[in-house]
Length: 263
Ligand SMILES: NC(=O)c1ccc[n+]([C@@H]2O[C@H](COP(=O)([O-])OP(=O)(O)OC[C@H]3O[C@@H](n4cnc5c(N)ncnc54)[C@H](OP(=O)(O)O)[C@@H]3O)[C@@H](O)[C@H]2O)c1
Image (tube, rainbow, N blue to C red; front, side, top):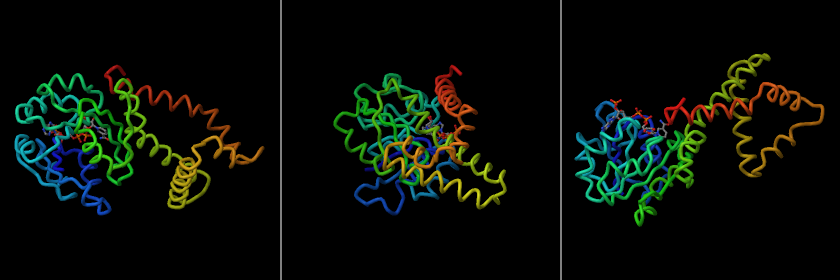
């Protein structure tokens, strides 16, 4: 499939990097094309991934079977209005946070097959999360999903919960990176050198992810390392006193509100 990236910024580049990984089988690897109003952004993406750059949105649509809209939410209407007349029934997938399928359809020719996906940055490594809604993709849905499926785990989410899922999946790497960084610094605070603290903090989190993935039981993992009256439970008590859980709930709520322009 020939995939056109309309906008070649951060997330488009992560998608193109994921599709250009050497371990993607050729039969699943799309040919990637890109257009950006900033030619340097498109050139950067092409330099990293081997994608082909074109110099107009019309040329992008003409060269491709699937249009992926990767511009900022406020730019989507103008970008879609610019290409609408050239789509000729091609499917479109929007990456824009907070812009709903009914809104997007209002900017597209009637009958356009349209889906929504919110990828997180880990798609660049093929281990991303992709919050997904088939929308009006209809019979094109299976092929379009397959193209995104090589980038990570595609999770269907009802559109009315898309903003919430966007925060957990796509803002999640920011929250998790902050935790790892703070954990590393805590190791330094008790006397480890920076490198050792960084290696141990990241290794502990990565190993825990695998344990939880296999057992699907965060409580079981916590109990297994919490000897009664021991070291781990002493640390957990401090995290609970510092209100880690309500802090995360507030963080997710604030991010959802900011996406909707209400916070
Ligand atoms: N970043 C993430 O982790 C992430 C995750 C999931 C979803 N998303 C969604 O993905 C979209 C892109 O986010 P981003 O972080 O990649 O943004 P970004 O880095 O700002 O990239 C957007 C690019 O599109 C260009 N552009 C603007 N209007 C255009 C047009 N009409 N035609 C072609 N290119 C145009 C922008 O140029 P100018 O800078 O000159 O405007 C910019 O280079 C957003 O809607 C966001 O909600 C992002």
